[in-house]
Length: 136
Image (tube, rainbow, N blue to C red):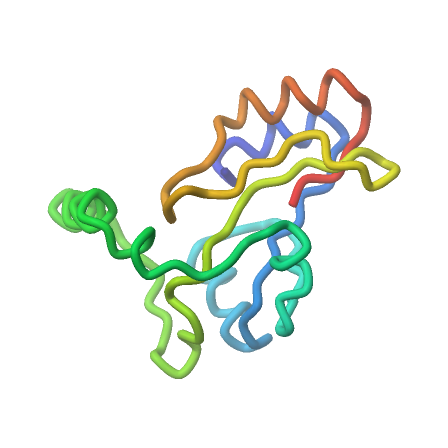
């Protein structure tokens, strides 16, 4: 999503990346991915729970996801090199959510698998229709 940051920035939004990991691991991920967004740490996963995001071995390790990862490797795509001591829960599911200024969820996209993300254009359209929300 950060490759299309300009689209989101033009909407006067604030994008937050939420992580349940430790500060050192989160900082390493930000550095390795080049992500420019602010990160909020949620070690007790209160935000994850509030948005209904659980852990799922079957969603993360399904054949389609593993095949996609294999294709990325075959194409030479690099992945963050996170030391094992920072890998707390490989099966934690994520999501993308857009909140309006009052905190009301106006777009909810809990991921069906690790690569399931909404189109940025869909998020921008939702943001444009309501004003100045915050994206998580």
